[in-house]
Length: 392
Length: 202
Image 1: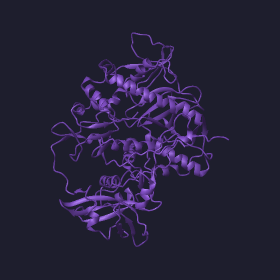
Image 2: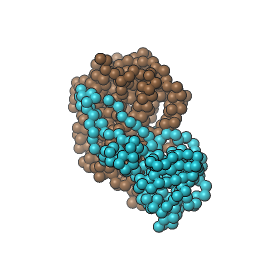
Image 3: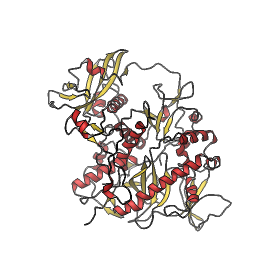
Image 4: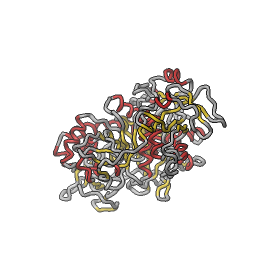
């Protein structure tokens, strides 16, 4: 795995905006950065990332089955008891999952190590699935990349197939609503991209905003036109929903959510120690535990992360049990987990984190984000990748 | 190959963040052709939200086929876009692992645009849309442009995009997704109970 400087495509900003990608810069800093790219071998992709992500995805399904059927574990993850039946029912009904993203420390040397699983509202989908693909095709045409270069990225095709399977299963009847919050450009683009994939598979979609969802006299969710919301794709975390005023209407609703309610069991950092308990010494897992202030952590260098947190907030890094780094944030009331410290590999002064996408249960693509700080937050840059062609 | 073979976005893209305001002549009967979402929005016949919904409805009703041949038999050679499903490779299989998989028929004619407008239907003034595909006999020129519908009818439009040969069959085929132009009255429902929490994503 190498980091290679490349010439950005002429007029790439216009290309981005023509394709509905307006958040290529965030707060004045470049977010989509095609002045460099990562080159990986097919072996690094398949053995290093694709297969481990598939194995972890399968392990996570086994873990979810354990969690949803155990009140002790649901409580340990601080999922509120009023939702336990909903979580269990959604698992027993086999409600389908669309996607998730595993974040790994990986540089081609040694096994990829799992930082976390973004199982509910993973971001950077559009960039990875669509714009990165376009970059590769353009660079092949421009001769910037060697002939035969490929990319670990069938995310878009898998998305279409996954929505088609929702229809085939007979579960998806009528229309599907697609919701994000107002006033966020990144979420707008992501939801519109997902809705586009769904439409291409034949799903009748309707775009709404979380803020505009209402309840009718029976406490069922409706859209601003008064239409019932039977299927809701939400780019909005479960733990926000359960804290919101309308959270109390969730258990009695007749809405099926994507991601489904059972994903609450995996969209929680508590899944890291539970996974490690079940697979101690697994090459792709870092030692992890539920943090208890009364107990010494099992290793000297470690990270504390809140059970529920996003975008790198409220993370504490310890070396020799002394805090050396921390990020701000509003999370952490529910408690923390500990994870053995594993800084991103530094490649040319940059710390790449490899996000491997799972769509419809299948490992199918890669998006690399890098950051100069040790925590990948929401200001990391997205760097495209390619797979080097076979050398004869 | 480990990447998607062909990608297209039908609804995203070419959309500017801010767009023209509400339409004019709201109750006017008329049918228009649009070759992009942007064209619909800038036409000011519909609001941006209406354009999205009309385009989405048109796209959702595009016929799907399980093979290229079936699609081309109806829509003509070279018109069909397919993303035959790729099953991610088995360990070590590399390029050899691409398997065609049936998932509800993934071949569809490329949509050239959509027609949308208002017409008199059973419930009064209705608003609906349908997809437009390449007209094998048509030409695009200064006099206007022509397309065909999924049902095989030729649609001709003048230089402003307005349909000049509107027929009852065309409006009938928009019956599935058409809805009355008049909005609902207040439902007494409450809203605003979500999204107290701030941004999502991780």
